[in-house]
Length: 499
Image 1 (cartoon, rainbow, N blue to C red):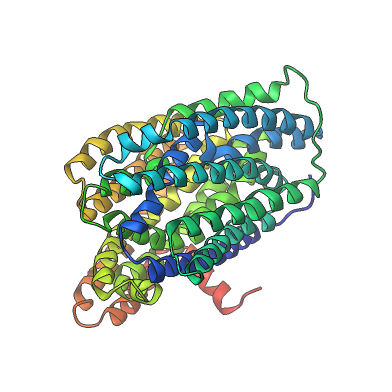
Image 2: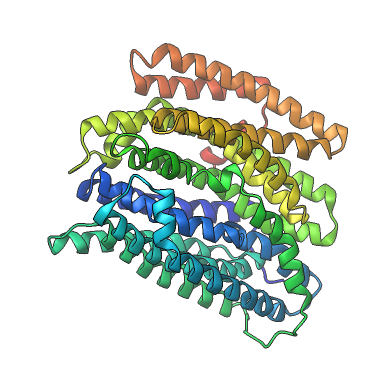
């Protein structure tokens, strides 16, 4: 295997890329807020992704790189050429995508009518056209994810992190160009997104994989990699979990609320995904290739140690960030979005939704790391079964709050928290008692420190939100230090004396 960064460095690379992508995501949302506001036009943009996203998930689209990495890692660890396995999987996924995309495009008018009964007339016709364009976008994402998997397998993280950055830049450029010619529309943003995905999510990722030696070869008719891929992907195809569907809840249930409900929920969720991406996603993405390599070598103790270390460090970082986002939610929304057509009243609505969403940021950390540990061991069914059970409970609950933005955000957040907790329980039931006890002690100490921080925030926020955020973080750090959470002094030393 090629030389690669250590897991901490890899996490830093991914975090930096995600941060830049999220900053551009802020720019995208700000541009959309200025040009379109929190209106029916913005809702239409969100609706356009519903059918393509679901079709994408039907081929494990949201998990393509996760599914492929263990297969490629096993080849690389054994010294075999992974090009044949990749080519076989790429051909199979390409055929499935072509068939599924064509079927979705042809049935788009009927699907739009059924899924979005509130959208009628010209708006429905526009939504059909936008849905078909979004299908093209998802194909680019799916095939690009396979090229990213090759790079992750070799523990190369820089180029894959550039894909979302270029994609977001494309959306911004598309929206601005559409506004310059005097006809601002959600279609302009979508066209820009397709251009950005073509360059960043597909073209650049092909180049990144090619420079690592990937070559397309004629695969054997019965290449075992295809069987391996389908075996690993099947649970992800049939089991739609709360994490995969979390982005769909605002579109499916927000349409029944006042105009702008879906847009408000999506604005809030995207702001919440900044810390989730920088902390939770970075921890999971960076750890996964190492976990896959350890699994391929049969190093179970190494896997467990990597999981524990990744969770502990990421949680210690996530808690203070969560406090800042929740306490100062109105500040973040006002600075990020309150421009142009996005009004002060919109800020009040979105800030309240952001505060709800952000409370479960630490649970996203647990989910991102532990589910990848199961995937690295090729135990795909375990997280899928747990997540699907939670989903089956979540959907009826969402019907009770349909159209209520706060209710949708609360149910969504609760579902993520329950899922992450459940999957953690399942994981730690399978580790030695001593290691399980060590993580239980860490969780107990962390909970005490969090309780002190939350009490401080509740007491001071009515007087001065900024002071509340600073004070609550101070209490968390001091309490964690006193309770013996080792990661806190370690991170503080790195901040004071970075290497």
